[in-house]
Image 1 (cartoon, rainbow, N blue to C red):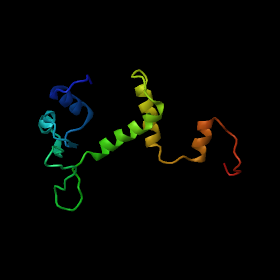
Image 2: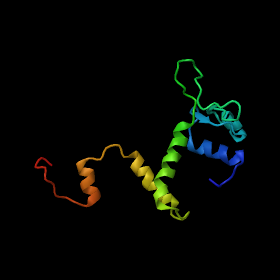
Image 3: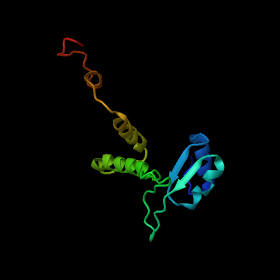
Image 4: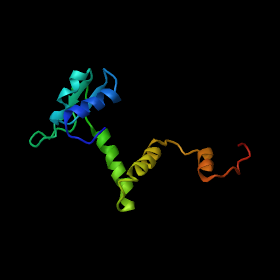
Length: 128
């Protein structure tokens, strides 16, 4: 997707990356206004000054299901991961993000995984 703040490229990306019927939770940027016309459900939190909404409970069950904290938190994690490198070339940024993605998605570091990562085939466990 080309870098643009126009709604047209955004809506084309939404159509390509999602299926009709999915729910998109965004902020109040006006460019998201056409998302509902793509067959996707759209809910927005209004971060604007004065209102200060960060999450909203639309169905009254006590769970604030309308938010975009997951996405914002993920990018905060990327920023924290990149901080020790003191600047990353834009040419290699994708590779750094790929390493972060791999580490983020890794849920359990098993013995077998660690052996493969370290290139070791020997083990001290007679059962493996």
